[in-house]
Amino acid sequence: MIKTNLKKSTFPSTIPTNKMKLPVQTRITKNIVLLGLLSFAVIILYPLFWMFISSFKSYQEIYSNVWALPTEWKFENYSLAWSKGISSYFFNSVYVTASTIVLTVIIGSMAAFVLSRYKNRWIDAALLFTIGGLMMNPQVALIPLFEILTITNLLDTHWALILTYVAYRLPLTIILIRAFFLTVPKELSESALMDGCTEFGIYWRIYLPISLPIVITSVILTAYFAWNEFLFATVFINSSELKTIPSGLMVFRDALRTDWGVLLSGMVIATVPMIVLLIFLQKYLVRGLAEGSVKG
Amino acid sequence: MKLKKGNITPILFMLPTILFLGLFIYIPLIQNFYNSFFEFSVFSQSKEFVGLSKIKELFVDEVAIIALNNNVKYAIISVLLQVFFALVLAAILEDKFFRRFAPALRVIYFMPVMISISVIALLFGFVYNPQIGLLNSFLELLGIEQLAKPWLGNSTTAIYSVIAMSQWQSIGLITMLFIVSIQKIPKELYEAAEIDGAGKIRRFFSVTVPQVKEATFVNLLVTVTGSILVFNEPYILTNGGPGNSSMTLAVHMYQTGFIKDDMGYASTLASLIFLLSAVFALIQIKVSKTGKED
Image (cartoon, rainbow over all chains, first blue to last red; front, top):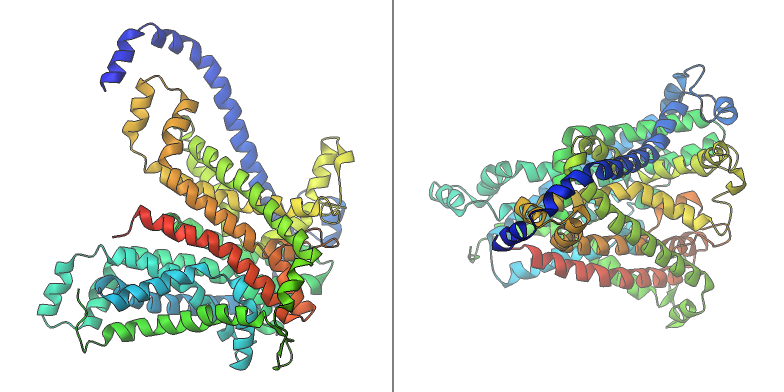
C-alpha cells in the first residue's frame, strides 16, 4: 500500500493525461478484440448450425447448394434416421450409460467413504491403488481387455461396455467424492454412532445425502463419458443391434452412403441429450471439471 | 478414525472397487507387458514366445516413427493453442469490458466439448469434403479458391486437418478450466496492480499468469498426455491415411492388432504408449497432490 501511495503522489500528472488519451485508443482495441471473440464464436457455431440446417435437406440439395437454407424442410429425415437404426443405438446408449452411472456412483461412493473415514496402512495402500488407476488409459488396455472379455464370454454384450466403463470412471469418481467426504464434520457421524447407527447407516443416511452436489457432478461426468465413448464401443461390440450411438453412427454412415440428410439427422439426435444436460446442469459440470482437473 | 479389528465394513465397501480396478485396469496392464513377448492372433488362444523380437521390431518400424512424429506435432500445436491461447481467451472473457458478452461466449465455446467425437468427426468430414466442403467453398467465397485442397486426401495436410478439428473441439474445455481458476484470484491483487498503474497486458503477465501457474501446469500435462493417446480423431477422419501420413501411435496399435492381426506387436506399441503417457500422468498426480489434499 505504501508503495502505491508513493507512486500516486510522485507522478500525479501521469494519471489524468493517461485518462484523457486512453479512451479512444482502448475503445478501438476493445472493439478489435470483441470482433475476434465473435469471429471465434462463429467458427465454433457455424458448423453446428450447418449440421442442424442440413439435416432437413435432401442429398441433392446439400450437394448443389451447401450454404442455402432448405427449400423444403424434410422432417422425414429424422423419422427415417430414427427407424433406420438410431432408435436402437439410442436406447442401447441410454441403457449402457444409466447402468454405468448407477454402478460407478454406488461403488465409488462406498470406496470414497472408507478412504475418507479410516486411517491405517492398508487404507493408504488402497488409496494409492485407486489413484494409480488414473494412469491407465483405455487405449493401452484394449488388447488385454479384449482377451479377458473373450475368455469370460462377455464380448459383444452390453456388459463388456458397462464393466469396463465403470472401471475407468472409478478412480476419478472416488477421488472427487472422497475430497468432499473429508469435509463432512466428524460430530455428525459420532452422534449417529451413539444413537446406534451402523457404519452402513452413516454412509447411507449421512454422507451420501450431504454430498448430493458432488454426486450430481460425478453423475454428469460419467454420463458424458459413457454416452460418447468410442474406442471400446467400436471394438467390443460387433452386432449392429447392440451398438451404442458413437459406434452405431459409423455403421449408419457406411450403410447410408449418400443419404446425407438422414445421417446428419442421426448426428443431431446423438448430440441433443448432451446439450440439454449441459444447459440444465452446467454449474455442476464446470465444478467437476475444475475439481477433477479433467481426465479423459 | 482408527480401523477397529473385526469391523468388516471397510473391506466390504472397498471390495468392488478393488475387483474392478484389479480386473480391468491392473491385470490388463501387466498382461499387456507380458503379451509384448509373444506372437499371437485374435482368433487363437495359443501364444508363441518370441522373446525380444517384437521389441526389436519397434526400432525398425517406419510407421511407428511417422506416428510418433505426428503425436509430437499434436502435442506442440495443442499446447500452443489449448494452453496459451486458451489462457489469453479466458483472461479476456473475465475482463470487465467483456462481462456482458462473456456468459454467452463461454457457453458457445464450450458446446463442442459436450458433443461426441464421432459426431464431430463425421461433421468435419463434410467441412473438409473436396467437392461440397464448407472449408473449400468458404475459400471460394473469399476468392482464394487456389488454396482449396482435398484436405484429408492430401498427405501433407491430412494430419494438420485432424489436429485443427481437435483444437476446434477442445479449446472451450481448457478455456473453462482457466476461467474457473482466474475467478479464484483475489480481486485485491488486480486493484493493487491497477493503482500501481499497470495496464491490462501488464496485469495479465504479473497477476494472472503467476496466479494460475498450477492450473497451467496441470492443463499442460493433460494436453500432452491426450496428444500421446489420441485415437478417435485420426481413426474416424482418415484412418491414418493417406498412406500413413496421419497415423498416430494409438491408430497404429489398433491397426496392427485388429486389422493385421499381429497382437504381440500391437501390445508392444501399447506398452510404448503407456510408458510415454505414464511419465506425464505421474507428474500430474504429484503436482495436483501438492495443491490441496488433507
